[in-house]
Length: 424
Image (cartoon, rainbow, N blue to C red; front, side):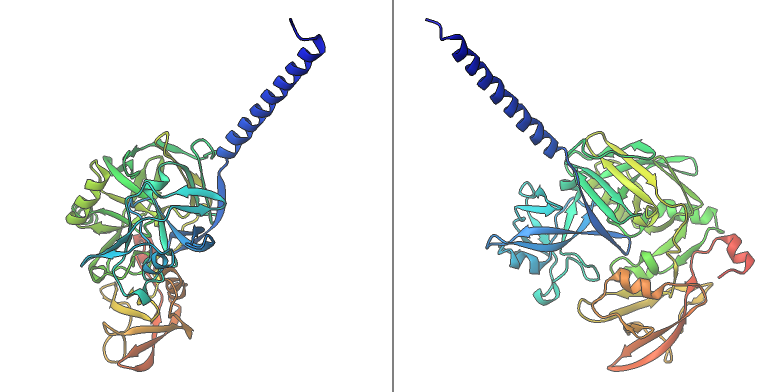
């Protein structure tokens, strides 16, 4: 016997209501899944640092500074952070490691980290490990192996960082198809130098750009007029490694990087052993890295799913990243900066040296009476930069004694036209 008509109508309405509710919930869930988040970013020494949150053992969240590092597939974190999260730390003669944190929270979005095998921890005393790397205000990086699962937008112009599921970010600007390593997310961009085709990595985590030493030397020999220098001053002073005092730096005439035509790009010669390491990780032939020193005028979009990168121009002018006092520095954690050397300028030391000037091993204590203890590399180079010819007062410490040295800001890597016109 069939139910009365009103019973059947009630049942039908309930069915339709439940169906509509489920549909609305599904649409809501998809909408949430497609939402990207945008957070403020600090651009420090051309590196992108954002805030994230990690869960502590007691269930609370701990704020942490995160380095956006798309040119490195490995997860790194500080010893202090691993200890605070109660992660089991194991050390060898060269490095420590721990299990990765379960996830990282960025702007309310949960980024799982459990698929990573481990977190690498720099081998240094615990009391010096409150940062991921000395001279940098970050305790964990966000590597390419994690970023490759998302849409990513690095806005150097407005100091913002956006991340979201594939399809959640509307990219703008000229684009290029790129090659992406499916296992680690490393990006290689089709490029050209003087009409010859190459691959160059895209690495917004690197403060300077690099080019194969073999190609670098050939170009330098063929173009003696291209601006060049010895010594990693300014944005080329990455970490304060001893070899940075001998680094060769040159401005190429022009570089085609995907859809971009970059004028006068500053690049460092990359030794063959390091290039071989980069090529092995990339999985294809590459001749170097384009770092953020060449991208600070852009909003860089990484569409991993479609193997496409975007470059939206945000401002037309170039920053004078080599108008600096010509020191080469090594950060010392909670202490001052050690002076590794002095860059040459027009064949002479760019800063007074000797008994009355700078000596290798001296410590930089202050610039114009502003202390540099515990500041980042970016902050100290901001103090050392300025208008060419302007004098800076450097407070130097040697053997427990402090004294002052007057040093001028130099216009390193000047264009030949500038040099002939007498501009400094």
